[in-house]
Amino acid sequence: MITAVFWDIKNFSELSETLVTRDNLLVEFLQEWYRISKKTIFKFEGSLDKFMGDGIMALFGVPSKDENESQAAINAVKCALELREKFEEQREKWIKIWKPYGRGRVIDINLRCGIHTGMVIYGNMGTDKNDQLTAIGTNINIASRFEEVANPNKIVISSQTEMLVKEYFRLNEIDHVDLKNHYGKFQAFEVMGSKT
Image (cartoon, rainbow, N blue to C red):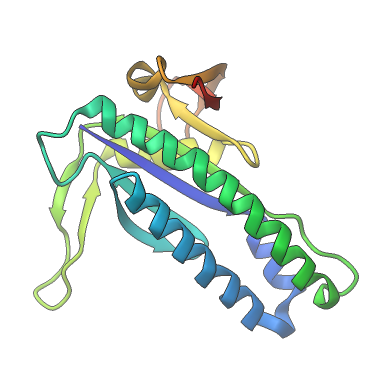
């Protein structure tokens, strides 16, 4: 089993529209965000799967099949908490930079995060000219859907992840959620912080 984590910047498209004449500032922001994210994911022994526009996908617990599943999930949540703090610092800095070019307004951006643990298919999904180690399967899709239901600046985890990390983090059970293209209600938890 692996723990998949998805991050997305809410309202980034709207921000792009207000800064259409200064797109270089958006590129510089994303480049900085990518550097911060990559460093933080590696710090917690995660694998950066891919950047997707203003979104990020990371995996914890691969490629080693011997890694403790609980520790991989704990590392994923620790990473999400630290990245949330780093994003807030970066956001405050860049809002000041964007403000003079926002045509009278600057869109407030926030980070959303979804985390889910489960079995996946992991391997090289690329071509003979372009290697791409990644994970696919229903549980990757579910992790992505948990990110989509997360409110701004929130980290939402599945019950499968909750079972592995509940001794280490303060969690708040939230209403069962509907996940796009998945039947039934899913139990979800918001990560409030570390217990230590």
